[in-house]
Figure (cartoon, helix red, strand yellow):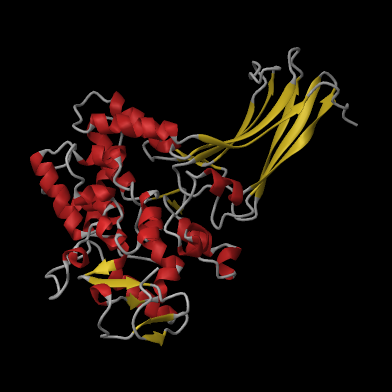
Length: 439
């Protein structure tokens, strides 16, 4: 869904080009890059109802999204007469009083953590009045105008945290997607109905139903770069929506929400979630064979359940591994073989190193050939995920820089979080004693 780039994004691209012209990723060249990286990334059942036309038409959805995601999002303005304090509030806790399941799901999601220490730690070095630069992060991570004001006020006070959670620290909230000028927007009820226009008797005046909330283009507002945005090797740095649009999932009319919001759950699980990884790819460990004095084996990986490239974007790294272990499961020296599945780029974004990701229904294999170690008892097949691999290296570079960074404590926390996010989602071990010779 192409969007004309904002003035802030044009300035960021210009700053990035300047920072990449012969400078290392440190000092003055660091923050333009960090700002660019920031920029990447059920309703009431009461009241009279009317049918909502399915699909609502492509043009109508586009027009709705152009209005709904016009950034920066305008302030909510005056509170409508008769609204109670919870109805007027933009705080997720207020929404959670009625929408309990959705609120509890949201709290566990990355949307709720969109303004984590990695983003906040970078923003702390910005000037309070640098609103356009703030928007490079806030436009997706905390898009409400009230959150932009909250950030500016916190920067002016040099607030380091420790008090009540400020609006900008709440990340992508319920209101970020569902509230504009104190009006609520969302999908129709499950039976296809919605409140009558101008109806009364519903909390916050009910809501305005739009088919856009069940359309992948709704997600594209933050998960797709557009014409004029940053690209490497002819591909946008973030290209998830277009990857989906080129897949059979788009042809089968299976939108992003069908996997990331199953049964309308507000979970948005992805590469950080072990269960999602298991459901996204099929992994087959081909049994080992003896070949002379060595071992041959194979680990097959196929993207059978991910509606875009596996993994999407430049941040994650998936590593397929085969190695020999001793009786106690310890890896034996010189027996490890790996295949990295990722879009690998230079840390300064100057070059794409390799793109080994799997398109939907594409497969790859790690072929294993190695001498049999004298102490080998098992051959171990493993799939590891480093969801924040790029950011791990980026945060390390920030901390290694010689300049003073006000958010260093937050960056350290972000680095620790990125390391803790690693996990193994597939592991099998096969005994090597008595392995049949290769035919």
